[in-house]
Amino acid sequence: MILFIVMKRFLAYGLILIAVLGAAVYVPAFAQYVPGGGAQVASPEQIKECEQLGIPLFTCSEHQILAKKRLINAQEEGAGGFLGDSGVPMFGKSFGEMGAFIAALGAIFGGVAAAFFAMSRKKPAAATQ
Image (tube, rainbow, N blue to C red):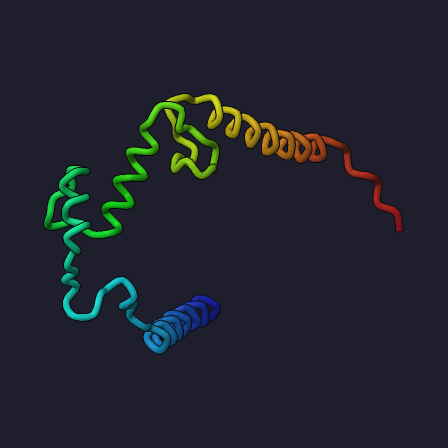
């Protein structure tokens, strides 16, 4: 009974400590917000490029243009690279490279798991004093 009360008190103090430390180090992140309300005005060249790429004008920005170009580059035939500069990290139109990657990881982790299993099946050595 006493142990239960001590553990309950310990848990309560721990939660209070976590709350106090969390409040002390809490800093809101404003890095993703642009000063001035976030209104970004696209240049006339960017607007023309957005119209060519089919990007709506209200979302036209340099980031949207680059993302759309990367998507177009990734969808082109022969643009499938394995973590390369082509813009297609691992998911291309074929499963070959990603399948080889998954098979290699499976062999590594499976080998480690088999080694641990084999070690656990051995009889322990007799303890000497």
